[in-house]
Image (tube, rainbow over all chains, first blue to last red; front, side):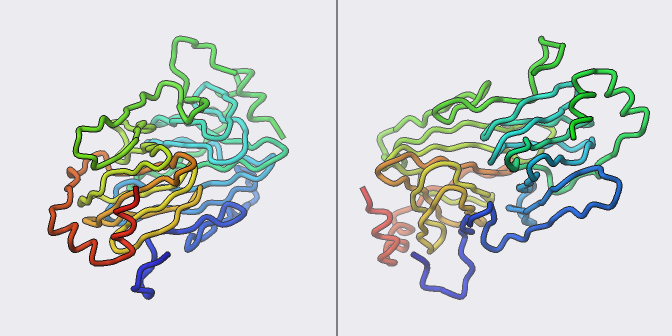
Length: 156
Length: 156
């Protein structure tokens, strides 16, 4: 069912197989050799000049992980697909589909997919936001003093 | 797996059965006799002073519908559960789980669940936003000139 004005783009973007959407571009993150992330794609679902928030969908392949980073801007996350683990600050957490995760300002965070399936999550951010910071060796040393975090970071 | 600091609230809010989340309040919309909506609940998933966007989850019971309204602020919607129909401007659309819907400024819109199951959707908005406007009789008359819209609005 569509409008008579067939030239106009629909307000609906249909969900397709493999967690893709109509008229949404897929951005694979290319590994630059530093191995700071593994097997991650991004799709920007909502980004417009007339709304302050952006909604993105990230997918981490089986056994993959996002970049360990921190920044001033806040992440509001909802797991849309699969399961995995996350580090948020000093907390290592198990994640199941539909769980919510909030990443407060300047909090180290990383998402990891389980071995068997991808981990897909929605992430709401402000369109105007600061750039992520990567950990310095001293930050990593500090994080690894917590044995649970050390195990999380060392997972292959 | 949780942090040692058990007093601190987790950054994770777990998904529970019946599309509820830990530490998220359920707000049923009470029918005030005008029948402008039918069987709608709201849960605010992300709302913080340090992020400009808000993420809410609305659930429309089987056969129910949201309020027909318009406003300056934009909605970014993702269907999280079930199926249904929506009116956005002059477009009546079928909705399946995970479909995206964008509601532009000052665009009449309404969501309706199918008879057999609830329709649950995420809705991203700006935290600072204008109040919705309800249709005047002249607006309804204008909308109903489109027969597809008339059928959508008259659905019981």
